Amino acid sequence: MSTKLTPQVTATFDLDRSWRLDTRAAIRPEPFGAMLYHFGTRKLSFLKSPTLLEVLENLAAHPTARAACAAAGVTESELSNYGRALSTLASANMIIPAGPPRPRRTAEPVSPPAFRRTAGGDTGRAGCRPGTDRRLTNMFEAGLTSPICLTWELTYACNLACVHCLSSSGRRDPRELTIAEAKALIDTLQRMQVFYVNIGGGEPTVRPDFWDLVDYSTAHQVGVKFSTNGIKLDACAARRLAASDYIDVQISLDGATADVNDAVRGTGSYETAIRAMANLAAAGVRGFKVSVVMTRHNVSQLDAFKQLADDHGAQLRLTRLRPSGRGADVWPELHPTAGQQRELYDWLAAHGEQVLTGDSFFHLSPYGKPLPGLNMCGAGRVVCLIDPVGDVYACPFAIHETFLAGNVRQAGGFETVWRESRLFAGLRQPQAGGACRSCGSFDSCRGGCMAAKFFTGLPLDGPDPECVRGHGEAALAVVRHDGTARPPRPAADHSHRRVPVTIGRRPPQRACDENPLAGFVAD
Ligand code: SF4
Ligand code: SF4
Image 1 (cartoon, helix red, strand yellow):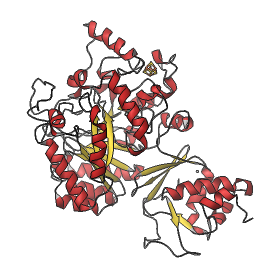
Image 2 (cartoon, helix red, strand yellow):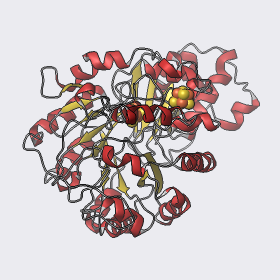
Image 3 (tube, protein in one colour):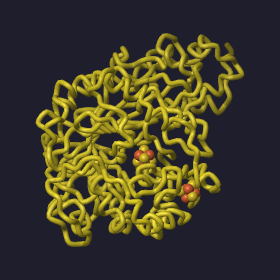
Image 4 (cartoon, rainbow, N blue to C red):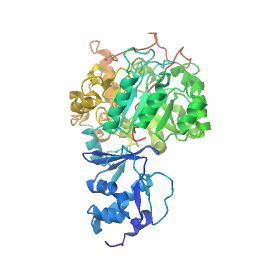
């Protein structure tokens, strides 16, 4: 083959040296090509060409990337495209230099981890944006062979009692999965090549076998991100986290000041969270997440949240308040006003590349350009929830029998639920769009969040309750005036006790942790 490269490729990627897949990168085949996940950077990339996949699979077996491309049948005229794709993967640390002609830069083992399977010439970073990556979004909407990540609530037990807790947590449920059942589930996730689990609750760290399960999971190549209010995150736990690439943590904090936070999460919860953040920073944990549910009382604190995260070497993660769990009771009073939604959009448009949002704010995209993050509803397609008793729901914010796909204890376990559930098959069908179909913003907004519509009593094929064009408000007014159409109630309630909730700046007696959908990926 010719050694002549386009200047662009020469400047960004050296085809004439030896490369290999980083040992911390996992590849999973998908119908559209493959996905790569890096456990160290926690970034996701997509391969949309089987040929690139073949190049990657055989990269380490060839003396140069050029030779690997030639072996996969890449022609001279195609080489510049493949060079760019490999350059993208190199800048994401998915592939690293290996062997001659230059010495290896690190002492990492050459053999790949056992979980690496073969799975592309273009790549894409996670976080598909209609318009820029519509094709990928369409493929996601058809569902993946396995979730990219899933939320696993380990327990309903919680030391706190947030007014907006999506799982109405507080008391442990005696039917919660045993440690043996939990380990068997991890074995299944490893087999399915689920890249990581978002562990939440309740407060997951109060489960006595929490660290056993985290260790078991990472030893079985299923990365862990866990959400905590920080209660057990002492200096020792922080050092433990600092020692692992495979564990990520997010600290829940709903106010940049104690008064705003504690009004939602309970007296002392701000101090607990800040102490945990300080422990993580002191242990050298960089890039942990500070996870904020956006409410009417904290939109004005966006800059302060960012500063807090920056001061601790952390990354800010913003999540939408959904009317799920106890959140259903407080959503009308707590969800940001229309003016605040706009303020939030503008702030995200200015800071979005530095802030994680998962799939939280794609309903705001009609304000302008699509925001970074996953711009679609991933329920049952790319994400799902496993609750403490093993029930599998389409998404963490959809805990209701309508969205119950099965239970991990049933024959065939989680794998069968994910691949064969009729509910998930239905969610993976093209959306009709209903009343939103004629909206000029449908391509970017997709009608918004299914869970937000459901728990406010709105039709699933209608507008989001926070529709930026105001259609949600109008629809909610109809629900409010129609006494026969009461919004559905969440499936279960494990709250410590039932008390009426008053929202205000005065702290309530208790608060609990919250477990937003994470990272997706796009994290
Ligand atoms: S229902 Fe809402 S929260 Fe759940 S995956 Fe869809 S957009 Fe996300
Ligand atoms: S009408 Fe529907 S598609 Fe249009 S902005 Fe509102 S929720 Fe989004």
